[in-house]
Length: 462
Image (cartoon, rainbow, N blue to C red; front, side, top):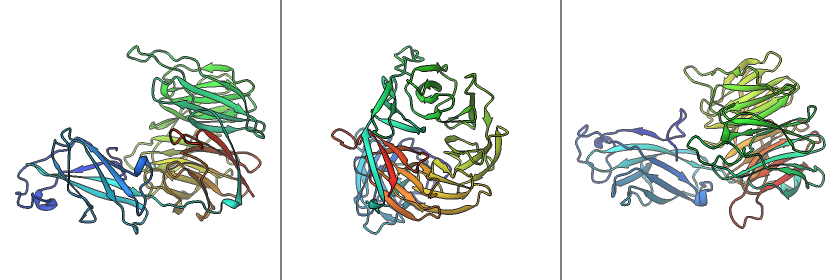
């Protein structure tokens, strides 16, 4: 239930005359006789906030209408089943629409025609997602264990696994950083972050909850992002003792962190820069400013992916649908390229040699294959609902994609063939790889009674 972006994933509002939209009861209205308006929200999701699939149902939720206002929904020129609908006395609307069995996966524009004295129309997107189900699961062995509540990210060293977790909205009071044995998956150390300062209004600030994670094994440091306080912190890999807590406001909406070559790189979500820290002095250095490859656009950073053999760091842009390339030798942007037909491009994964990069887009479920040197788009595949993050397994070159809404991890070949789909648990959120060919993934909870909730899973090719 969002409002607009450049690819049309968010809400787009246009005032149309009654002659053009002609909803029931308005066919005789005079063109340009009145100018309507709508400042509310309309969105669509599957049952229980799951994916919308062919043969299933879409739950339409909207607010901001006039009480009793008629709302007709049309797609492809035809009225959706049950249309027109009527807003309740609070101006909200909740409706269920059947999706045809033969509907192909994709993003469909739906026109909402508002009745009343001044006709108005608005367009919102309804995404129908692909359903894979279990696929070639015998090719992979999995081992999992329950870990911290609501895990966000996972990082791996040669002898340990580190995970972050945080529960709820601010002020967050339940958050943990944990260290696990990679053989037994047992938690060998865990720590709760310290209390955070009071919020701007004087209310309780909760704790410095931990979200993103990156490890500098040589320095013995675990870097985490404290997204709620716009900052970062450093913990010891040995016992998870706090080494340094940076001040709130250091990195706006900090998300991902990568530690490499004596520096820690942190994205400031939606900002055109990557923040840089010296892992020896623990001081902040000059940030790396990023420019958009699209004319007139601003780069809006989200995820990071390291290509260690190439000495490059790749950054996704969530709103402008593109990738920036950072040369770590110079500490500056060395290139960038757009990702076409991708909506809400959030996660990305680079091959270790920096020859390819794969992006994932939550808006249209697209996994895009790119030549990381030329920027040429080599392919695109739809692997299922809600791809959030990805990682490349170096030995095979295969890409593992966390499908947050589909509750699965898809395995895709370098050429874009879907090789497997592993239903590992509810809402997989983040994954990484180790040096032995294993892929590690953390997943959150699907709600009360979910026996797959809050787990770390090791995926190993058979």
